[in-house]
Image (cartoon, rainbow, N blue to C red; front, top):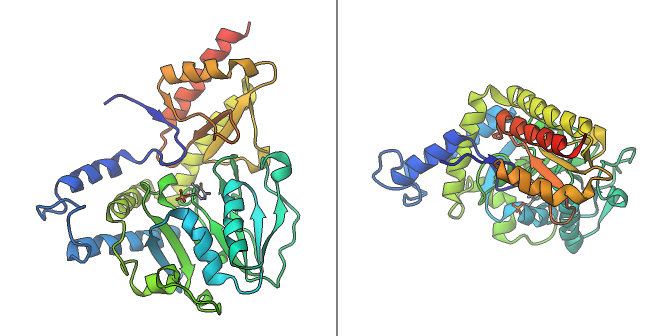
Length: 358
Ligand SMILES: *Cc1c(COP(=O)(O)O)cnc(C)c1O
């Protein structure tokens, strides 16, 4: 197989072990003589996967009693609506840290009274707003812990006087999280825990059932808690690979070990961005994401952007183009991105520097 250094933002690089397990299960799922995409989701073999996956979530993230773990369809984008429908009665506040946060807020506004208490739109979402006060008369406060497009991240679990809801699509399982500080955590699997097709939801059971609106059956979290994420046919393949990805996370030593690996990888790349005169980082230093590392050509070298893309591509770098809305470069260094990939990118930047400086 041709070697690619995959820095895609999502879908993205997955552990080889998970991909290989998926290949085997596509051929023959647990000796059933059928593919994992052919078996009944009501079979005992499948139910064992669901159980294992739920247990791994609980174990790895140390999820306390009183929370449910759900695997649903519709992407994180549908969760924007789910959250508001299930939790918004009077008022909800959002921290507007990027396009995904803004989209989440838009859905909530369609349901009721929702507003941004702070925004970093004034500087193209290059930092996380600070010093805002979380009101106590709201149903929930919504944050996006990692801003995939802009490369900023809320790296600590914040204290919140009301129900805290977090979109953790792009940094879930990248560090330990104190789940007890959150009322609800959700995200698409395709950034750090699996292929596209499923979302994870970690919800504190007792926050539900408090809104007066009619909830369509499929948009009511309680339906899926009761049905153990099998009220309707779940996205089996995506869940299968997610389960294998979690096994890999556990085998790495869990989230403390994963966090160390992520910090190390990010430091290697940020150090080079800061050192190399041809490049500069775009996110506020204290808010720099460990998952999505955004940078541009430094002043005076802007005209070299296309040349660097071609140069890096030739050396096996994939997916380092910044999001179409911001341009520049973005290297996503998710859990399964190996250190060698980051080192290869750094070597590439250094080689490019030699070509263009005296
Ligand atoms: C990718 C992403 C989403 C959207 O996820 P979908 O599953 O494609 O709907 C939402 N929030 C964040 C932070 C993301 O990175």
